[in-house]
Amino acid sequence: MKFRSILSVFVLSALLPCGGSAQGSQVQAITLADLQTLPLVLFKPNDEVRVLGRHRAGDGGGGIFVYSQWGTEPVDNAMVVATSTGLGRWVRKPGRGPVMVDWFGPEKDGSRDVSDKIRAAFAAAQRHRLPVVFGTGTYLIDSAEAVPLHSGLSVEAYGATFLFPRHDFLGERRMFSGESITDFRWEGGTIKGMRSNWAVATTAIGLELKGPGIARVTLRRMAFEDINGPGIHILGTKASYAQDVTIDRVTLERCGLPMYDWQSDEYQRTRSIYPPRVRWDLIGMLRIESFANLTIKDSSFLSSSGESMDLNGGAGLRFINNQIRNSGFGGIFFRYVHRVTVEDSTVENSSSRGFTSEGDCWDVTVENLRITRSGRESIRLKGNQRNFRFINCEVGDAGWRRDPGRDAEIRLIDKVEDVRFEGLRMAPAAEPAHAIVLEDQVRGVYFERVGSTGSVRILCTSGSNPKVGSFPDAKQIIVTAEELAALVASNY
Image (cartoon, rainbow, N blue to C red):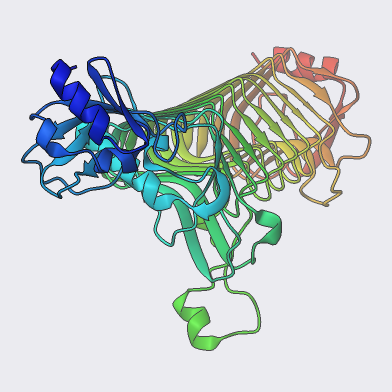
């Protein structure tokens, strides 16, 4: 802080506008408007002025500004403020602390679009290599273009709500989006849609990261609510996976509504009276494609419209201590993934399946997973699945949709081999078609220490060879849990 002479302070006191004052050796202005009217004749380069607020004292927009005599930076009335003569600049002294979004004067009552002010705050953070902090309030994001994210950005948004407005247009709308970014962290805040008021043609995405080179991303203590489409969408490439992504204590609720591809060439050409194809690439509250080393822990997936999640193509998935309830379609769902660990999680009341693995998955360990009241199957493995271990898992009450041919606690289909169930506990519904279904080239299925509240109905179709005895093809076997264990023991 620079010190003024007694004469300079006296002259300043006489010349300052009504909003400003000189206190001892420190020049002080009430607002940014007062700062802009200070007479420059009394300031030397690098002199400092303390501003108490942007529009009024204490509104969060104040701080210390330094006089830059030859400054030509663009004026944004947050980090850079014009002088009384237009020559030089007043430049905010950020110090070592974060960039405060309040400096940029956003309305925090949800009444007006503030996307430009958030963009400016992020850009300032990038220039100064500082984190960003949002104040408590509601920030309306009503922009056709997403607010861009950048590498190295760290955001703290506890107490902030980011609101999508109503949209009546065909297409997609993203709130925050970044391409090929690294070392990105976001903590706190709620990204919220207005789904009940939205046109069904609009797809919304809360936070999207895409492109090659994505690495070291952490999303922590965030919430996503009422979004038409994925709350989180991370899209790596087959040539460059998104690496080292952590989703920690995140809640996704009432997101993931399946959307139609209204903008497809086929639909635009034919103008069919029927809806076009579903955008399967945007189904799911959480959608991550092409990843390496993905950790999802201590998170909640509640009341999804479609899949709770779709994890597609990757290596190294850790899914630890998560809760899934009331899924509109499926619970845990991954495809083309290997080296998977699922631990200490629950899936309750999914309309379709509790746990689904499809398309070339291997080296999967599932421990202490509890699945109850799935509309179809509790567990479904389909197509080139190998080396699975289910340890101390519990399934029950599957098949409440009464869908003939699809009801089962466990269904293994089409080239499934080397699957071991250890310490499995089953509570089959009163009228499922079967508790266990093994069909079409299923090999090497082992059951150890099985417990069941009722008889175990097993269906083995052509080509299946489970390690529970020699069953005739396409014949139903009904055994007790004790008999199932005995059959297993006799085949070791």
